[in-house]
Image 1 (cartoon, one colour):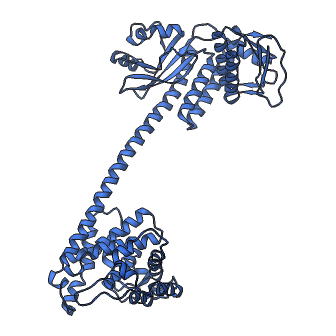
Image 2 (cartoon, rainbow over the protein chains, first blue to last red):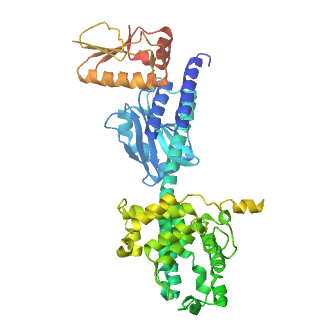
Length: 423
Length: 109
């Protein structure tokens, strides 16, 4: 044993390097190639190969070879009996000549003899064959000793773990891809359902046909202008589409009244944000703010909104966006008791009410979006599609928006009211 | 025909002999330098070299990967009917090669 010490020290050095190589998460092919080098170099093995086992195809597919020549098969089939025996053998060295009873060593006997493959090690990790080592003769020409076989098994375990990890990673990637596709399908279904709901809400109100859908689109435009992420924009649009869901419980005659409704009817109508919140809260949305947008989309920065009369910072941001989109659509579409207002009037209204009803930074973002489209700085024609070409090309609209943008400050003077009141 | 090959930026010049190619192993024979040497040896054998001389005069460290590379060089040379010569070996390297059986396949100079 004392005579063997330098050999052992050399082999342990290789084993340590192999452990590091496997842990380093380098390129998998490169790791396997290096592993074969380290194993060959540790014991002075003239030739060899590392294969990965495919249990579906029952094949040992070579990942790295050294000195096995072009004629050595790169894919070796394994029958059920071989597989059973390899599993029973575990990660232990099999002498290729002594194992001729197994079909695997009979079928490939010529290849093994030609390239003097003496040992085969099935890489069995956690009761699963993940690969195999094919090892040729030692440079000394001597037989492999028992301690050398132990070292081979120890190094084989490292290589087996590397292959197993790689298989696991591939499996996770495959599942992840499947999950992504499923998630995309679910998202599409959710988006379609939301739009169907919006259409259903709008059907109830014959005078404001398409209102929810338009508010969804305006909300989406504002969120896009705010440079939100695609997921956030989608969430904002959903909040817009569903903001009036509470109207489903309001009597049709109140919603469709061709006159200004009375106080009692108004009180009934004004319940729709809270009802909407209760409906939406019961649903598990991928976007958490959707029920809040329904509840607070009639709140105003100055506290004169409903249902809770919240002030600026008390109002959820998404509700402020939906409020702006909702009001904009109300002003720019014909109502039973009121014709749509000219575009310049609407711009003026938004400017005057920024900081009172609307969050100024949102008004700025919204107007900037319209202006960019008017100046053809964007290929999108979304405002034109929603408002009509003629409406968008109203004389003086562009200067009016530019002037409003110059005048508006992004922060509301009311921003800190709630805080001051609380103090 | 003499071919001198080196991967050292300032290569030493080996002893020339007919159909002999000299390869200088460098100070640390590892995967990076080793694979270059292996490739170069293969090229020289394909070009008709009948003797590969590996010069270890500058070599301080040889790891297991280096051993594996040298085994590859020996295997390639044997398949091509060429011989391999290891020259200027340090005693510790000679001991390592002897222990792992490389010296059975090469001429030590």
